Length: 297
Image (cartoon, rainbow, N blue to C red; front, side):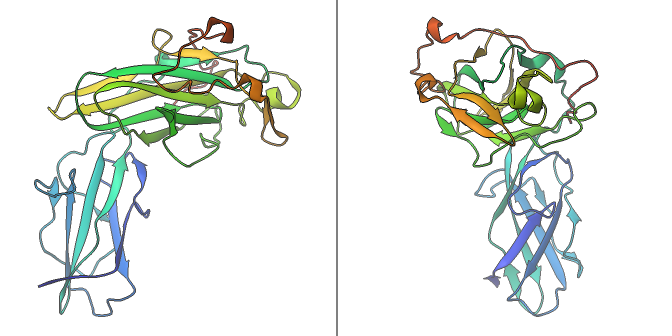
């Protein structure tokens, strides 16, 4: 008989991680309340909470090992939340709570043609507004954002993650990271919003107005509908609107931010917002300066 126990499970040594871009992630587990020796284990992974049709059921594996057990099931999909639990067999049979991991991009996808933004932002932060219309009910949705600048992502007026100062610093002439964001999307109208600042890449611009680089980013959105069809949406100058009419009139890693509340565009990242020509909304293409490329999976 299975006995529920306080078992902590990890995927790639992280609890409930977001952005796993490995086709065969590894699982580990441990417990402070189970003191008997493990004789075997079972791992079950599903793309639904109900575990009706698991994408992997390891079955009983006779082993004392509990660290970095590699996934060996159906091919995982990009931008999808997976649920898993572990059973431990000893003198008794124990089962863990359900844990999750959310995948990043698992295909080879290009990035260069999707960059938007550009030069001329000066000290200001930069607003981007992307109206979306989804044609059917959504099973899972995720946005993937690559940028050398710091930014804050919102969806329908709400922050999609509680993290700040995205993206992480790298040597931008060699590597540009992307970030994964699960989206609470469904059929109908939505708006993806971004406020982008200087960060390390354009730090000199924030310090003394000497532009070191452009303010650019690329976005790819994966939508999987309940009928099984998958749609990729990508940022370009035809569907994204940009504005430097933003309240952060100066921003710097070291000197902080100068905020002018008169420039705030309340609700710019919601479907009800109307773009005012006086607030300088425009369509702008972008590019990564020579020698700099993103590194997709």
